[in-house]
Image (cartoon, rainbow, N blue to C red; front, side, top):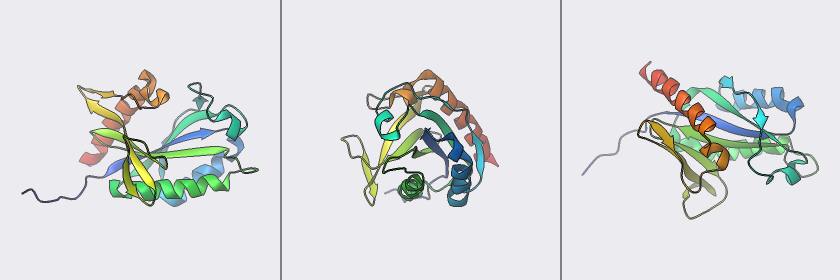
Length: 174
């Protein structure tokens, strides 16, 4: 019988959809207060993969990622999603989100996103939060699945997560 071992810490990555660029400095402050120092923020690009969020957000959102500096315990993913939902509420206008936060954890093996929506391929974590294996690292690159969101399945995003994985592995060594 194998004995349980502590989890290896992971890199916290927060996917952001936003139509409220004026609020980003406040968002970054709240992320740092909640999750620790920000290592970097990617450039915002138009979210052209679907119009799913346009109606709720009142405009076509941009996508960017906030990468946190400190490695975290992967067992905390459900709590990170709960807290990110609380942050989203602070930016709501007339009952609609203007910022959407999707925390995930990057490890050497995969990228797992947290969500409140149950589907056949999602695993219950805690308090109504599910984990989704979104990308798997195999054959020296990230592989997507039929359920992987189109932007995360794109070559540009997989390349970004590959570079982040390299940086994460260096961080683990130190």
